[in-house]
Image (cartoon, rainbow, N blue to C red; front, side, top):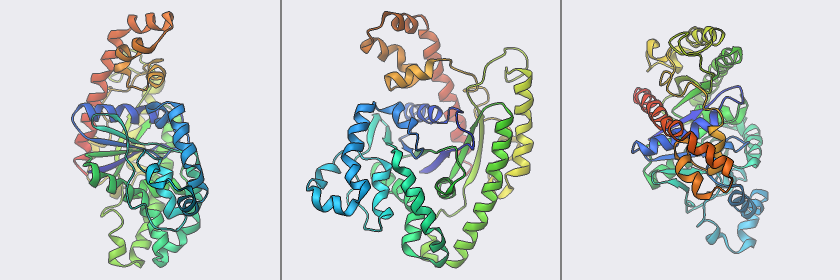
Length: 366
């Protein structure tokens, strides 16, 4: 099992949409996959389940997010609560409050036969605050500090042992704060969904600089803690798997990526930025000639127009909209639009499958 994060220092690049569709593509290719939403915006969660269901999940959890131990003692229905899917913050909350972990893992929210979700929660910033408070304790080998830093990875591993996942995909916020430092530094690899613009170049530079600083911090921590405590962390520091250009406007025939010349010029600068700013020890298993190319080539490079919005509306991947939408939609105009573009909706399936297969080849190099 590999834990892979989607990460970019810039928001609005379609990261959550890509994570959602990657999960479905892996599922359809036969790989059992868990999606974990650690972006406070919860877009990945909203792609997968409707807001009323999410509201009920959060409402039930509210007393536990306020004071987990007290709620567990006074609510009187804890055994029933953990029989239903719970958010990732609910699962992290015992360590945040400095108490024992939940003895029995709640079920995941099933999205498809081999695709599951741990929903996000807006309150995850509270866990980030606790990480900041406890960070210095890791240098002294403080048990609670180390539990707090490694708990996201531990939860992923516990669910993998229970459900036998092939891949766990984590969605993150567009931040270089301590929550993402913890997530990225304790997963196996990460990819950067990018747009073909100046912001992507600076974003990759920022990520590379941050990785360099984070690795130095973790090396110090590793040198100060015991061998047993070191085992709680990954054997190897996170590896950069690559980038993909996502949701860009196509201009057929201009170049091999079918991008406008301005966008193409930015994309061609990305490999040199990667080599300069992302150190070799953070990408040592993937050859330069592979990491210089966008994952999947042009498979998911070009915009799907309004199709991702329709997919979110019907809580399904784009290619399933023509089969699911008409069964629940009452608006003739929308039905006509879906029917008239049926082949285009279906065609996205192969694109995401191609992307997923290209990503798997890189993950296998880790």
